[in-house]
Amino acid sequence: MRQRNVKNKKDIINNSSYVILKPNEYKGFWNKVFKNNNPIYLEIGMGKGDFITENAKRYPNINFIGIEKYDSIMALAIKKMPEGLSNLKLIRMDALNINDVFDKEISLIYLNFSDPWPKPRHEKRRLTSSHFLDLFNGIFNNKKEIVMKTDNRGLFEYSLISFVNNGYLIKDISLDLHNDNRENNIETEYERKFLLKNNVIYYVKVEKK
Image (tube, rainbow, N blue to C red; front, side, top):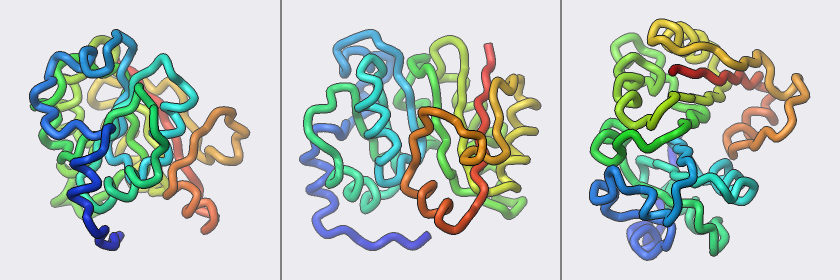
C-alpha cells in the first residue's frame, strides 16, 4: 500500500521520547529501558500505532515495543500517540535484524495484517515463514507465543501450516473474528478499514514450549 511522505519525519522520530534510536545497545537489557521486569510484548509491523498504543493504555503491567520499517508510517504513529506511556517504546528497523536487538527477552509477538508476499519466490519474506520463526526463537525468553490477525486467507492457511511444522501448538483460532463475539479485541487501523469492506478477519494464537 502506497504511503504518503511525512514532512520532517526524521525530526519527529529523533525527538520522540518513545523511540529508541540505538536499540542494539540494549540487547539483553531491555528491562533497564523500562526500569522493571514486566513481560515484554512485541508488535512487528506496528503501522500507525493504534493497536500497540491501546494495549499500553489497557495493560500498564506489560511492556510493549512496536517495530516499524518505514519512517513515514512511524512518524504518523508518533504524532497520534499521547504523552506519558512509560510501558511503550518504538524501534524503526527491519525485522530481519531482530536478533541484533533482542536476546531471550520477549514473551509474546503480535503479527497484525502482515504483508502476505503471495509470490512463491518471496516466501522467506513472510513473517510466519520458517526463516522468520527461526529468528524469533532467539528472542523469546521462555515459552514462545505468537498472536496473528490477517484478512488474507492464503497467508492465514500458509501460516497455520508453518506454525505446526515448526513445533507450535494452536491454542486459539477464529475463522471470523468479528462474528465470534470475542471480548477485548483491540483493532488496528487496517482492521477497521478491512471491516468496512466486509472482509473476514482471521485470528490465531500459537504457543511453543
